[in-house]
Length: 462
Image 1 (cartoon, helix red, strand yellow):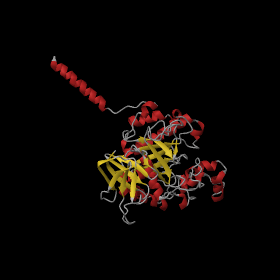
Image 2 (tube, helix red, strand yellow):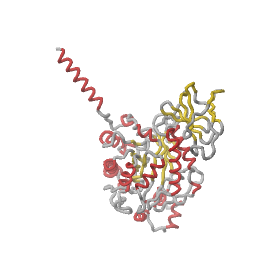
Image 3 (cartoon, one colour):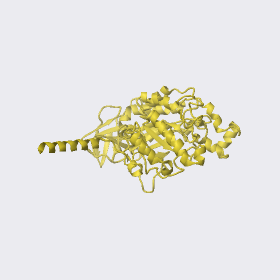
Image 4 (cartoon, helix red, strand yellow):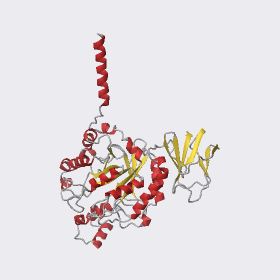
């Protein structure tokens, strides 16, 4: 009797192990979809490049918001067609003056030629910036697709304008540099006939097949949806699509999604939560990042798409962007920083300069960014932000601290060590009056290891 019993136990254990090894199956409801963890690679990456590029890059114009506060989509150049159709306002006035009232938005498509687009060059720039992932607008609200989409005949980059697969070409180059590749996708299209007349058919016959094609062709690491606000997630059939994505897609274990799946979903359902130019879509009393991984997205100026109306003074400085990255990561977020290429496929020089400056800072200080997590304290006064990784805590001073850096949050021990990243030698410290006082080395301008922000690595602290 013992042998059969032992065989039965062994079989039961094998079946239990096999069941445990099976990937999770997700149901088409928010409780199940929300139970899927955001893949860890995304939390480790911290810094990504957003790219808004399309037909709107031809007129490349929007009014500039001199107040520094984005009001709706008015300063967004990628909203050119929508603002044009309003038949009034600054975009209409510019269009009438520059192109004439008879010129339609569709007339810009042949001029979107991307003749200077060098995907290898772009990928090299992104790698040198220190970014770990890239998100390209595969299709914005105007419906123009940057790949040979069968659902958008005559209104995609293979049929008109560049006459090439922009999404596919950039994917190959980005991945060849070891970066993750993702796509932005707008659920709605302002002027698609089916969207305006029969939402159900639009979703079933256009949107869902198009998104599945995008996933099947390119296996993106990120699917970054937008344009969800007109309808609840049920109308978009979002949970059905996400259940398919997480259960059946060829890259189901890697792919990351955001929270823009219906008018009720931001900061409540989906994958990581999103903010935009600092605007937080949270209910009253909720705290940013308290319940879910999040990501801030914004342009270097006040627009995502390239805006010829912006001058140098409208762009954030490299120092401000480095500080934004540090601030975001210290609170558990990622930064998705946008560039707006020109219609011929160039990344404007001022945007290249900003990216390369961030990259130089990360070469020295990336240890305090990549793979870190929010520490128990995000900040120490106005000038210091914290991140943590393993047994290290990183105190990032947003500016040179002078002869001494005083920190109230860390509690040192006899084993505590302090180093300035990029400098090497351990620094002297003492604990007095409830503060960790660090003696900062007297360095010349040429000896300071980096610009904009300075990282002090602490070990042996609580």
